[in-house]
Amino acid sequence: MSSATSATPGCRDCAHYAITHDARQPYACRAMNFKSARAPALDVLEASGASCLWFKAKPRWNVDPAASQRSGP
Image 1 (spheres, rainbow, N blue to C red):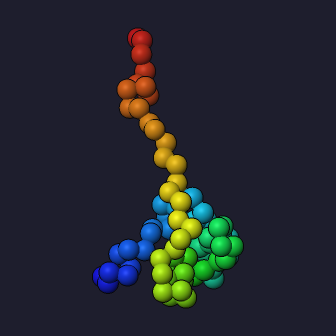
Image 2 (cartoon, rainbow, N blue to C red; image 1 turned 120 degrees about the vertical axis):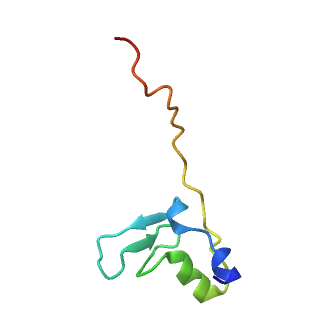
């Protein structure tokens, strides 16, 4: 793996990443308003030579395992 691809942010962890219903272009970037046949960050890297500047981490659910346990008989 090259250093350019390892520095590219993962689209699946981005808040702007979306899955489309288009079988030919199943991935999308809402921030840059385009669809792609591969991860949008790879198209951005190929076109500009720089990693995606619009990456925004998805909010994560804070799940407390103790809170999900049932209490009582």
